[in-house]
Length: 267
Image 1 (cartoon, one colour):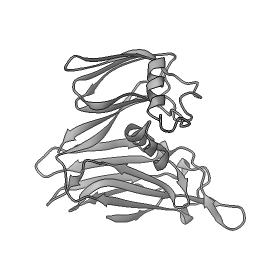
Image 2: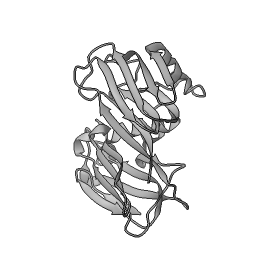
Image 3: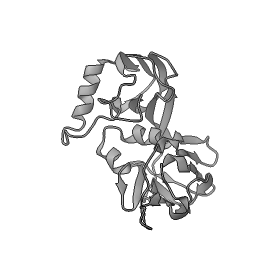
Image 4: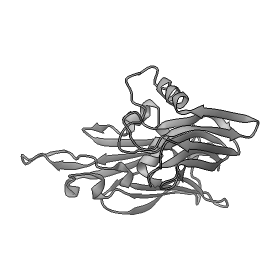
Protein backbone atom coordinates (compact mmCIF):
# COMPACT_ATOMS: atom_id res chain seq x y z
CA UNK A 1 0.00 0.00 0.00
CA UNK A 2 1.20 3.48 -0.85
CA UNK A 3 -0.66 6.57 0.34
CA UNK A 4 0.16 10.28 0.21
CA UNK A 5 -0.59 12.26 3.37
CA UNK A 6 -0.55 15.94 4.22
CA UNK A 7 1.12 17.63 7.16
CA UNK A 8 -1.13 19.15 9.83
CA UNK A 9 -3.90 16.64 9.09
CA UNK A 10 -5.13 13.74 11.24
CA UNK A 11 -5.46 10.44 9.36
CA UNK A 12 -7.15 7.17 10.23
CA UNK A 13 -6.93 4.45 7.59
CA UNK A 14 -6.61 0.69 7.21
CA UNK A 15 -4.24 -1.72 5.49
CA UNK A 16 -5.85 -4.96 4.24
CA UNK A 17 -5.07 -8.16 2.37
CA UNK A 18 -1.29 -8.11 2.36
CA UNK A 19 1.60 -9.40 4.46
CA UNK A 20 3.21 -6.43 6.17
CA UNK A 21 6.85 -6.57 7.23
CA UNK A 22 7.24 -2.90 8.10
CA UNK A 23 5.88 0.64 7.80
CA UNK A 24 7.65 3.51 6.05
CA UNK A 25 6.86 7.20 6.49
CA UNK A 26 8.74 9.60 4.21
CA UNK A 27 8.50 12.98 5.93
CA UNK A 28 9.48 15.44 3.21
CA UNK A 29 9.03 18.77 4.97
CA UNK A 30 10.12 21.83 2.97
CA UNK A 31 10.86 25.45 3.87
CA UNK A 32 11.74 28.56 1.87
CA UNK A 33 15.45 28.98 1.16
CA UNK A 34 15.01 32.77 0.98
CA UNK A 35 15.87 32.86 -2.71
CA UNK A 36 12.63 31.68 -4.23
CA UNK A 37 13.46 28.02 -3.83
CA UNK A 38 12.99 25.31 -1.24
CA UNK A 39 15.16 23.59 1.33
CA UNK A 40 14.59 20.94 3.98
CA UNK A 41 12.58 22.32 6.89
CA UNK A 42 14.21 22.46 10.33
CA UNK A 43 12.96 19.84 12.78
CA UNK A 44 11.58 21.27 16.01
CA UNK A 45 10.25 18.18 17.80
CA UNK A 46 9.39 14.89 16.08
CA UNK A 47 7.67 13.76 19.26
CA UNK A 48 4.80 16.08 18.42
CA UNK A 49 3.89 13.59 15.70
CA UNK A 50 1.31 11.09 16.91
CA UNK A 51 1.09 7.51 15.68
CA UNK A 52 -1.14 4.56 16.54
CA UNK A 53 -0.79 1.14 14.92
CA UNK A 54 -3.51 -1.33 15.88
CA UNK A 55 -3.85 -4.88 14.54
CA UNK A 56 -7.42 -6.18 14.31
CA UNK A 57 -7.57 -9.86 13.46
CA UNK A 58 -11.00 -11.40 13.00
CA UNK A 59 -12.25 -13.26 16.10
CA UNK A 60 -9.24 -12.14 18.16
CA UNK A 61 -8.54 -9.27 20.50
CA UNK A 62 -6.94 -6.11 19.15
CA UNK A 63 -3.17 -5.82 19.43
CA UNK A 64 -1.90 -2.28 19.96
CA UNK A 65 1.52 -2.35 18.31
CA UNK A 66 2.22 1.36 18.79
CA UNK A 67 0.33 4.15 20.54
CA UNK A 68 1.60 7.61 21.32
CA UNK A 69 4.33 9.69 19.74
CA UNK A 70 6.83 9.09 16.99
CA UNK A 71 10.11 9.46 18.89
CA UNK A 72 8.90 7.22 21.72
CA UNK A 73 8.45 4.42 19.21
CA UNK A 74 11.67 5.17 17.32
CA UNK A 75 13.71 5.10 20.54
CA UNK A 76 11.93 2.00 21.76
CA UNK A 77 12.78 0.06 18.63
CA UNK A 78 16.13 1.58 17.69
CA UNK A 79 17.86 3.14 20.72
CA UNK A 80 21.56 2.21 20.67
CA UNK A 81 21.41 0.72 17.19
CA UNK A 82 22.73 2.11 13.92
CA UNK A 83 19.15 2.24 12.65
CA UNK A 84 18.38 5.14 15.00
CA UNK A 85 20.62 7.46 12.98
CA UNK A 86 19.14 6.16 9.73
CA UNK A 87 15.48 6.72 10.62
CA UNK A 88 16.09 10.24 12.00
CA UNK A 89 18.50 11.42 9.28
CA UNK A 90 17.55 14.34 7.06
CA UNK A 91 18.06 13.38 3.41
CA UNK A 92 17.25 15.08 0.12
CA UNK A 93 14.11 12.91 0.06
CA UNK A 94 13.10 13.84 3.60
CA UNK A 95 13.33 11.86 6.84
CA UNK A 96 12.74 8.18 6.10
CA UNK A 97 11.15 6.71 9.21
CA UNK A 98 11.05 2.94 8.76
CA UNK A 99 9.54 0.68 11.41
CA UNK A 100 10.97 -2.72 10.54
CA UNK A 101 9.11 -5.67 12.08
CA UNK A 102 11.77 -8.17 10.96
CA UNK A 103 11.81 -11.12 11.55
CA UNK A 104 8.08 -10.74 12.19
CA UNK A 105 5.44 -10.01 9.55
CA UNK A 106 1.67 -9.56 9.68
CA UNK A 107 -0.43 -11.64 7.28
CA UNK A 108 -3.74 -9.81 6.79
CA UNK A 109 -6.43 -12.19 5.54
CA UNK A 110 -10.15 -11.79 5.05
CA UNK A 111 -11.48 -9.10 7.41
CA UNK A 112 -8.12 -8.56 9.14
CA UNK A 113 -6.97 -4.93 9.18
CA UNK A 114 -3.99 -2.96 10.35
CA UNK A 115 -5.34 0.41 11.49
CA UNK A 116 -2.99 3.39 11.16
CA UNK A 117 -3.61 6.72 12.88
CA UNK A 118 -1.10 9.44 12.07
CA UNK A 119 -0.83 13.18 12.49
CA UNK A 120 2.28 15.29 11.77
CA UNK A 121 1.44 18.84 12.97
CA UNK A 122 3.23 21.80 11.42
CA UNK A 123 4.84 22.76 14.74
CA UNK A 124 6.97 19.61 14.64
CA UNK A 125 9.06 21.73 12.25
CA UNK A 126 10.24 25.29 12.84
CA UNK A 127 9.74 26.69 9.34
CA UNK A 128 7.67 24.27 7.28
CA UNK A 129 5.68 25.31 4.21
CA UNK A 130 2.92 22.72 4.27
CA UNK A 131 1.75 23.49 0.73
CA UNK A 132 5.17 22.42 -0.59
CA UNK A 133 5.59 19.40 1.71
CA UNK A 134 4.39 15.83 1.52
CA UNK A 135 4.29 12.64 3.57
CA UNK A 136 4.46 9.37 1.71
CA UNK A 137 3.31 6.28 3.62
CA UNK A 138 3.90 2.78 2.40
CA UNK A 139 3.92 -0.77 3.67
CA UNK A 140 6.87 -3.08 3.11
CA UNK A 141 5.63 -6.45 1.92
CA UNK A 142 6.92 -9.83 3.09
CA UNK A 143 6.12 -13.29 1.76
CA UNK A 144 5.13 -15.14 4.94
CA UNK A 145 3.52 -13.91 8.16
CA UNK A 146 4.44 -14.88 11.72
CA UNK A 147 2.25 -15.68 14.72
CA UNK A 148 3.73 -12.84 16.79
CA UNK A 149 4.58 -9.16 16.42
CA UNK A 150 6.72 -6.63 18.30
CA UNK A 151 4.74 -4.10 20.32
CA UNK A 152 6.01 -0.84 21.80
CA UNK A 153 4.66 0.25 25.19
CA UNK A 154 5.27 3.51 27.03
CA UNK A 155 5.26 3.92 30.82
CA UNK A 156 5.43 7.53 32.11
CA UNK A 157 7.78 8.01 35.05
CA UNK A 158 5.75 10.91 36.40
CA UNK A 159 6.43 14.60 36.86
CA UNK A 160 8.84 15.31 39.77
CA UNK A 161 9.28 11.60 40.54
CA UNK A 162 12.76 10.61 41.73
CA UNK A 163 12.28 6.86 41.48
CA UNK A 164 10.86 4.22 39.14
CA UNK A 165 8.67 1.34 40.33
CA UNK A 166 7.06 -0.40 37.37
CA UNK A 167 5.68 -3.76 36.30
CA UNK A 168 6.53 -4.00 32.60
CA UNK A 169 4.73 -7.18 31.60
CA UNK A 170 5.75 -10.31 29.73
CA UNK A 171 7.89 -11.30 26.75
CA UNK A 172 9.90 -8.11 27.11
CA UNK A 173 12.93 -7.94 24.80
CA UNK A 174 14.03 -4.31 25.26
CA UNK A 175 13.75 -1.61 27.92
CA UNK A 176 14.80 2.01 27.35
CA UNK A 177 14.75 4.86 29.88
CA UNK A 178 14.09 8.22 28.19
CA UNK A 179 14.50 11.32 30.36
CA UNK A 180 15.65 13.91 27.79
CA UNK A 181 14.44 14.23 24.19
CA UNK A 182 16.53 17.36 23.51
CA UNK A 183 20.12 16.11 23.62
CA UNK A 184 22.25 13.00 24.06
CA UNK A 185 22.78 11.30 27.40
CA UNK A 186 26.20 12.73 28.29
CA UNK A 187 25.21 16.31 27.43
CA UNK A 188 21.90 16.13 29.27
CA UNK A 189 21.43 17.90 32.59
CA UNK A 190 18.02 16.30 33.20
CA UNK A 191 17.26 13.34 35.45
CA UNK A 192 19.32 10.18 35.00
CA UNK A 193 19.20 6.73 36.55
CA UNK A 194 21.48 6.45 39.57
CA UNK A 195 21.00 2.78 40.38
CA UNK A 196 18.38 0.05 40.37
CA UNK A 197 17.42 -3.52 39.62
CA UNK A 198 15.53 -5.48 36.99
CA UNK A 199 13.83 -8.72 37.96
CA UNK A 200 11.92 -11.32 35.97
CA UNK A 201 10.65 -14.88 36.31
CA UNK A 202 13.15 -17.71 36.23
CA UNK A 203 15.28 -16.02 38.90
CA UNK A 204 16.52 -13.37 36.50
CA UNK A 205 17.95 -10.32 38.26
CA UNK A 206 20.12 -7.49 36.96
CA UNK A 207 21.43 -5.03 39.54
CA UNK A 208 22.90 -1.92 37.95
CA UNK A 209 24.20 1.60 38.48
CA UNK A 210 24.72 4.55 36.14
CA UNK A 211 28.31 3.65 35.31
CA UNK A 212 27.42 0.11 34.32
CA UNK A 213 24.51 1.17 32.10
CA UNK A 214 26.56 3.84 30.35
CA UNK A 215 29.39 1.38 29.71
CA UNK A 216 27.01 -1.22 28.32
CA UNK A 217 25.39 1.35 26.04
CA UNK A 218 28.71 2.66 24.76
CA UNK A 219 29.77 -0.89 23.87
CA UNK A 220 26.59 -1.41 21.86
CA UNK A 221 28.39 0.85 19.36
CA UNK A 222 31.83 -0.75 19.65
CA UNK A 223 32.05 -0.86 15.84
CA UNK A 224 31.34 2.89 15.72
CA UNK A 225 32.68 4.39 18.97
CA UNK A 226 32.05 8.00 17.88
CA UNK A 227 28.28 7.52 18.09
CA UNK A 228 26.50 9.24 20.97
CA UNK A 229 24.49 7.44 23.62
CA UNK A 230 21.02 8.93 23.14
CA UNK A 231 19.05 7.23 25.91
CA UNK A 232 19.99 4.34 28.18
CA UNK A 233 19.00 0.83 27.20
CA UNK A 234 18.50 -1.04 30.47
CA UNK A 235 17.90 -4.44 28.87
CA UNK A 236 18.04 -5.99 25.41
CA UNK A 237 17.95 -9.71 24.82
CA UNK A 238 15.86 -12.85 25.14
CA UNK A 239 12.20 -12.41 26.19
CA UNK A 240 11.62 -11.87 29.92
CA UNK A 241 8.35 -12.54 31.76
CA UNK A 242 6.86 -10.87 34.83
CA UNK A 243 9.32 -7.98 34.50
CA UNK A 244 9.74 -5.53 37.37
CA UNK A 245 11.91 -2.41 37.17
CA UNK A 246 12.94 -0.52 40.29
CA UNK A 247 15.38 2.40 40.00
CA UNK A 248 16.44 5.66 41.64
CA UNK A 249 17.00 8.89 39.69
CA UNK A 250 19.60 11.53 40.51
CA UNK A 251 16.97 14.31 40.41
CA UNK A 252 13.27 14.85 39.79
CA UNK A 253 11.97 13.70 36.41
CA UNK A 254 10.31 16.01 33.92
CA UNK A 255 6.81 15.43 32.58
CA UNK A 256 7.89 13.70 29.35
CA UNK A 257 10.25 11.22 31.04
CA UNK A 258 9.27 7.61 30.47
CA UNK A 259 10.31 4.01 30.17
CA UNK A 260 9.66 2.47 26.76
CA UNK A 261 9.43 -1.29 26.33
CA UNK A 262 9.44 -3.56 23.29
CA UNK A 263 7.64 -6.86 23.88
CA UNK A 264 6.50 -9.75 21.72
CA UNK A 265 2.81 -10.55 21.45
CA UNK A 266 1.04 -13.46 19.80
CA UNK A 267 -1.47 -12.72 17.05
